[in-house]
Length: 193
Image 1: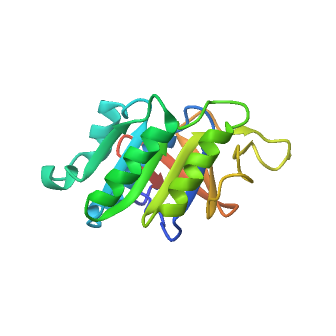
Image 2: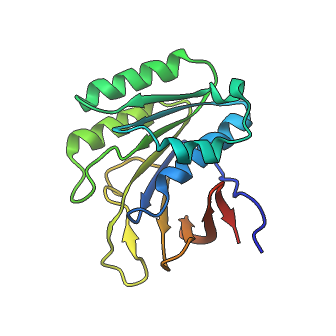
């Protein structure tokens, strides 16, 4: 029996989320954005592409239009440093920015380029908000982990979360501080089971 949509705990200012490919990292970010907005916050979203409109609508359904207007999306293309400067400027100008989300901010595989690591560390260093970094994880060499967070030692995050898909269905496992949380991905978002 599925209880309810999962409520993410945002106690730290920087979360590094590594995901297995196509297992719901963007959906998790959208759900976290909705949760922040429901609590009166404002969200800035930056990625090379905007979130899928259908998926966004499914997770944001039922949220009144005035509240939805506190979600601001920016394109993360071109010069990464300039894009981050624009993001930091917007986060400092807009009132009540609670969460800044960088989705697909780095290449899907290999080592995260040094300029990107330096840029996200600068963002984390000046933030008065929670920063969520979403990227594809790398293959883990440790038998107990299915993925690892690329750049884990270089990025100055407070927490590392891993989102995995242990089966070929809608069940996922989110590891927060190595503690597993069993989730199911539905049209409305992630539910705990």
